[in-house]
Image (cartoon, rainbow, N blue to C red; front, side, top):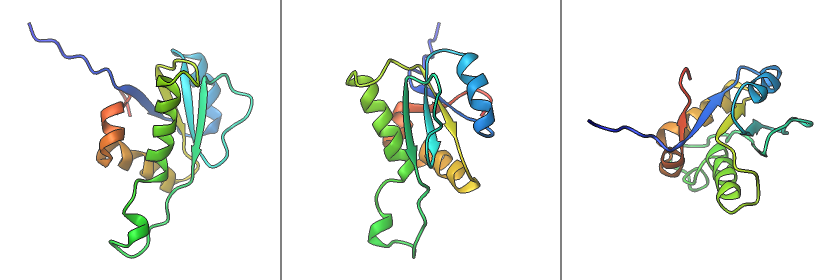
Length: 124
């Protein structure tokens, strides 16, 4: 018998901020990653925000680092494991634009630290 356990934290991309409250109520304890200003008055255990990177010429030095979404996901993860936030079991992403949605998707596909800690939730 083969076991297949994926202990990475599931990440759900929401369609808009209007879906956030229902998503928080509908599942296990969650953190929120928002593009721009995080929504106020939510029941999330932790919140982080990011601004999408604006790409420059291919290969320039300032774009060689990690994306804003990947860094924000790092902050969420570090807060969780260091006890600075509650122990969340999933992350809900509130993108504000197509660029923000794409940056999160790119981090989930290409950033080694993000890939090792987070995974797309089923249905994403």
